[in-house]
Length: 357
Image (cartoon, rainbow, N blue to C red; front, side):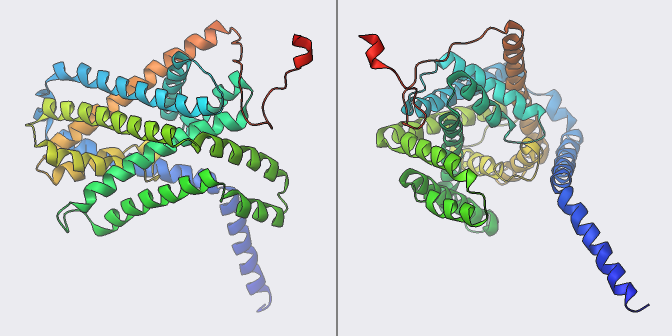
């Protein structure tokens, strides 16, 4: 009996561990959904407690705020095009912009914060036949944008009054920024591929090495030009400035204006908080961050909640626009001719020069 009980207990534990392993992704999804629901319920309760604030919003400023967010998205699409052109993917800006909105649509409707980026990569690869270059251009565009946001948060955190923002969060912001810088440097120099390839060979995943080499070549090529990196960084600053301006307009529409010098650091830190992947599409995280950080500069919880809800609605407006573009593309069902591309020898189309003479 004593021998059977431990064995039975071990069997139950093994079965539980096996179930947790099989259901890990599903459990994480439900956890993120639960966190989003709890945080959104909290923010909505704050808005409900100050319903007069919502009724007194100056709605005439909201269309202008949405226009600024549209301009910000246009800048991001152009930023994406710079990386694409480094690999010879001469995609028209109109297509890039439309695909960016489609990505926003899928980021909203899919239970993941990266679904839109995957859609952008797949769409670009379908047009060009260049999977590695298409994927790397999307990853770098998104990564540099997030790195710029983290950099702004890290910079402003240096000038914050000590103790005003929790120290663990400040340290996390600094870690995100400097870790991102190191990551970009490693990708540019190709230092990351060697250790990863060795590990893949060791765990018998050598078939991934060839694919990884294509991706590393694409990263290196798209990051090789200092001029392009400078342009991308400046465009990221412009895009963030447009989004901050839209947020400030919404703030003015909701409550009394505050000093720009107080507003910008708080929004930079709130935007950095959105990078923490604990909910779906930062739902609830973004809104709670607005309540917390704007509260530090005197904005009431109810007003900050209304500002966050309106900004979320503007984001959903982008998603609706992307959904319409996706629907029109689907209904058209017309093949798009892939542009002539030039890139790494491993992916570049071969041309028979003798046939041209």
